[in-house]
Image (tube, one colour):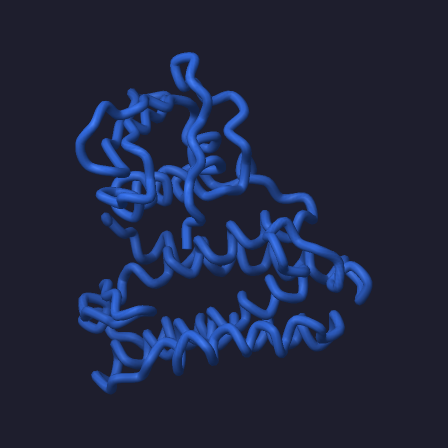
Length: 242
């Protein structure tokens, strides 16, 4: 994907501050309440955000030093850390998220210009460029802010972010997957629309059209797809984004 590093780093800082400001308005009872993610409380979401920042610090340090540092020790340890931290009170959650977010910013600031072009290893053996990590972190912060159910919605997300993540999900992450129905995802826009052929190869794809925000909300499982046009057909079920 095309990256704008300076823009993405600024956007991460701004999105994180919005998130922290919103979280400061909660209390212990609210942290223990269910989030919009099945089986997760708000405490699970906040803990995941903190551990994800720590994990991306590992990735950025690897890019800077050339040392192989796993993003997470393993999947079991990742999941256990989220469960172990989910029940913590607001003050502890907030301090953890502030510390880990600051550590991510510091790790990014420590990279030299050439470091950003290095290939880094992510979860499950996936790879990417170091320059893509700020947008990856931005996606975590923005989508999980929505998942907290405390006032921010998909429609509130910055346009460049919505457009970029939609292109990533429709054009890359769902492309060729057998568990995703064959689709043509068509986004309307002020300067002309964009389309992606995604999902299962072959067959007669179903065309789904709508605004970038409505499409992103549906593809990521955050919204039901109200306002999307499927040419009279029901919207198909999609797997979790993962």
